[in-house]
Length: 102
Image 1 (spheres, rainbow, N blue to C red):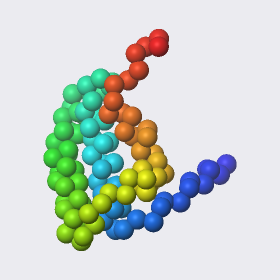
Image 2 (tube, rainbow, N blue to C red):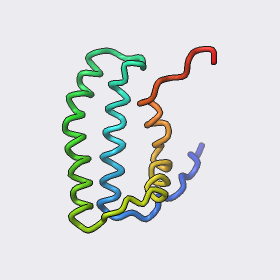
Image 3 (cartoon, rainbow, N blue to C red):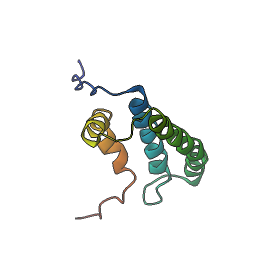
Image 4 (cartoon, one colour):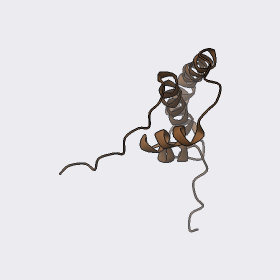
């Protein structure tokens, strides 16, 4: 069985692509730390330890964009890239889960 073909990523600069990658890496780690989600303290601790490096990489990606003169975040384009990369599901792990029975 063939997997459905994903829509293509929008055209991004290298710095924008790095920003998206680092942002999703950070979101994934925060989702693993989320105390409202099932998990264990060791996994959350490991994610919290890795979060320091991921946050620094995210900062560096934004600093690079700024140095290169990329002053604006093109929200519509970046949101399309996030959707292609499963960003809605991944960012959903950061929020509170729905109340059971509602």
